[in-house]
Length: 211
Length: 211
DNA sequence: GGCTATTCATAATC
DNA sequence: GATTATGAATAGCC
Image (cartoon, rainbow over all chains, first blue to last red; front, side, top):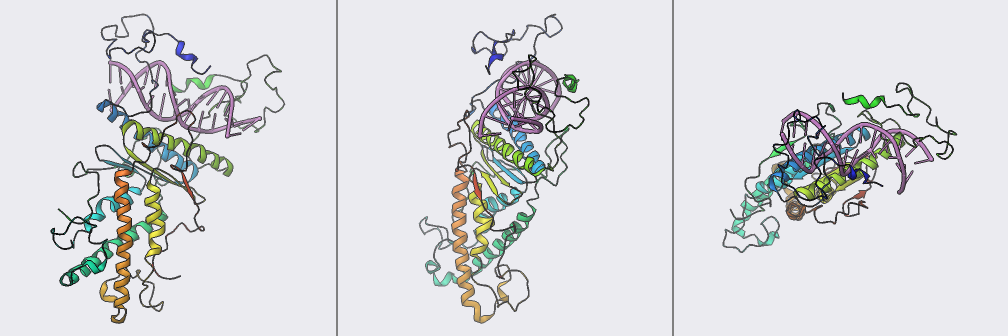
């Protein structure tokens, strides 16, 4: 009873969901040639929810649906007064975020590790254990202690900064409700959609040692 | 040309968007009494995107739309292979999150500050400046230095933990793609929707000193 | 929490 | 990036 509309037969439809060449209509008519109400589109087609194989298609879908997702988030936020944040890590490693989480995610996931690389333990002769700031203090050689403390101190400093920012955020996850939702000509602004390049393909965080 | 369909006149429609009593149809007919194809619903109505005044209505909308939002996020994730995370802070202070962000948010925004309260600077005689771990090392009195270093060390330890967790996350923001998207009977599971109580009304983070 | 009619999102296509 | 027809989300009700 639900999919009764599938029975409507248009010139476009192939007998039974049979695959057809993308340009099956090329050279058919340009809408003016034929008197029949030739449809120029088959409209939205039902798709299976599984990874899209064709790369270009996948990218398009990512763009469109991400936009839609953000819009939904914005609406939900405005309608209910909820604070919302959305983060999307695209396959190619780009981060698109909605709300103010990007501050949090960006700062913590991407930048913090960098700030932790000052002191790097005993040269690279050491085997690849945990990074220096995770190992027990006892493992730090006497002669490195000064540098170690300095690094620790700096780490603390950076940490402090981040926490402060976060505490501000928490109150202000003001996120969406604050920006003027211009539903008609709605489009994401830099405020709600930030795009960041990852240096390279590694979407992994580099923690501590090794260059 | 777009809003032509508003002209369709059903028994339900009041002359011109004029407000009507909620139970305007009470006692009209129960679908069997009338031969006319009496509509049992006016279907989805267009609404303005602004905070919903009626609380109960707002809650319903929050539930429905949050669910929809998460579903969209799930689909986007599966279709494009992107890693997605969504966090919603409801007005009443509940957190509903999608993906693994909750780990991140929970850990950092809520729990981390607690772990930083070990060393608390010079008693409470000190005025309410920055918390100890943000102030310069020089401000730490000689006699407290040992405790200070210990705390700093502990801080470092906690931090290490968190960063590790996060670095795992980054790879694994595996989030949605991993759970079986059961589109038909789709419903959020504990895996993707976690609900957390805030201790009290304060959605603010308590940082450092003072009890 | 389920139902229906309608609005809204979007796959295909240009 | 724009258009169009159709699949999906959902507002108002029970």
